[in-house]
Length: 291
Image 1 (tube, rainbow, N blue to C red):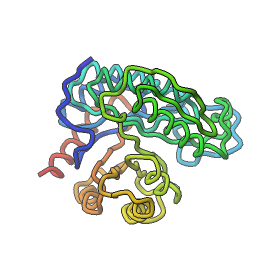
Image 2: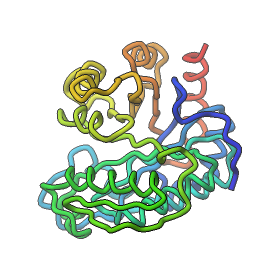
Image 3: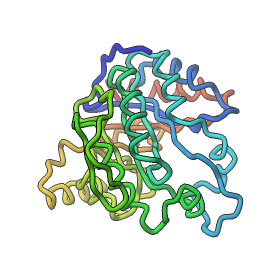
């Protein structure tokens, strides 16, 4: 895999794309090459293991996307393939569903991807939205955010310590060895991808950034994150604020940058016939934002 990294994950204003990469869309390798060739900084892929046919709870934002969400490539496999054909592209999860994953195995997979890619991983995390899907993975819906926190902190311990141990409510392991460690010191940045009023506090508590989905957070994300960081004694300037589904309009996108968002992520429709045209439009917007 490529290991030459020219862009730091923690640099300021960066621009990327997110797409539902499925077995019916453009291949992740072709997508990654196309994104990097256009001078964009980041590629994000989502995770969803399956869609239960019997669902008691509606998922309003995704009802029209149930078919592609049932067909997503595993993001670890797809991003590893993307890493192999790119040099500087940052590799993001939007998001890794920690309620669906064993934290020890996931820590190993993240560290391996970061190590082999030359330190290019951004790990977005969340709990998910479907009760039935979480229960299929043994995670109770009402405790999803406690599980996300516990498993995320356990992974950080594995990345940070040569002899790692963790004792929490949902994760408990005695001293152990787990290598390789990520290239990024302490592990890749953790960005929480969620939009409830509780997220600023969660980000300030145990994350490095927040992916706010455009139009879904009720409140002032910049102000609320700053207040949550102040309450917990953190410097808000060191916490990344990213906008998911950034507008394909220079004026609107510039407005979010002026508000305090430092990362803009544009959604690309998964229709293979339109992907490259969409990337061209996004690249033109980004070029104007940079100049």
